[in-house]
Length: 371
Ligand SMILES: Cc1ncc(COP(=O)(O)O)c(C=O)c1O
Image (cartoon, rainbow, N blue to C red; front, top):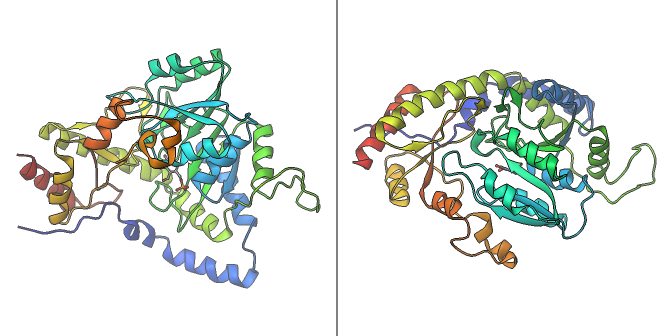
């Protein structure tokens, strides 16, 4: 029996292509001594606007910072409520709390694992001021319905597109449906840097300038010594900007590779009788993560690991049950679909360039272990 090693994501394979150019840039950056807020950052922001089809982009230090600053730019008041999901990475909820707002967690749909729209409608009250939508795993939410409900109730829409670079709903790239959207360039993301990084996208000039100031020590004019508002320092450096610029050139092609790969996985999962994210008309998934729903998940995960196959769980403890959010008084059973997923989902190794022999070994092992 072969014992191939299959990483969850092969970042070395993905990033080695850019090594030579990056090292050349690194040496010229040291010669030029231009590290922050230089030409490459500016160029990257322009290219992001073009590729993501948005009007304004501001690079920041991480996806988490993008969420914190993005929400702050909306000038919400203490105690304002933001409806969001618990089936996601914890940053969105932190960003709400760090803005002195209250996250209201609702459950997800049991087929596509994104926000349950009926629950969203039901949870709106006079304190609700915004909805934070995460297009999780690369799967877009139903933005037609969400935008309609948000408009009717005068709610801001914040989109977390950390996992959904270039995903589309009805042919429109996610991040363009709301007031502000937040990108992460964490190394394993579809567009991943060589460290932390993120960006805020918005089609509003007002929000853009507010974010720009908030992320630059609260300064509105960088040549003056006075600072108008309280801000932070959250900026992407030139080295990351250069690396991302190079990688951005391949993002569309890589997204297509992911979508083709997902079709192969879908077929194999279907044969094994596993639940996976559905392909739906008008929902253009960018497949950051390929996950399946399985019984005896933890033991399967261990057995796969013994065979050299690395899998992950996105996410094992839903946010509403995390210790950090104990003060909100959620309890087990409050969000049944989210909690069910946290116990039964398994993310499979999945990345552009994964070799055919690895895919065969992965599904052969799954078949053997599931029987
Ligand atoms: C859905 C989602 N939102 C936000 C973030 C936070 O991004 P970062 O790690 O760049 O702070 C992540 C990253 O893991 C994420 O997956």
